[in-house]
Image (cartoon, rainbow, N blue to C red; front, side, top):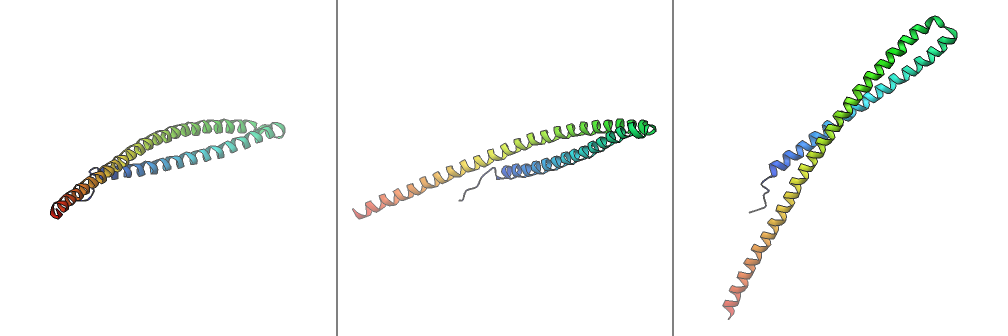
Length: 144
């Protein structure tokens, strides 16, 4: 009879869950990076608008109100994006925590499997030793 780990199904499920957690975390991190890129682009637009407003102060005062309104709109947009980024960071943090829990669970089953394997090997050695001892005893009886 060979070694059979009784919790092999649990180990496979834990590994599957771990892979799922990795995929989810990667997806959420990718979303976060995309949001940060959007924020940077919008921030650059706001800086450009501020430069245009400064230029309007000097040469085109009639456009000053329009640039002021546009800058306020960009500030509001940046605040909204920043809020979304913070929410996404929280989602990433929770997925990281879930990943850690899955990793711990998987490692627990792997350590248990390794322990059971060592116990099985030790038992096999004991059984072999018993057989060897019996053969040795039977051999001594026959020759004397």
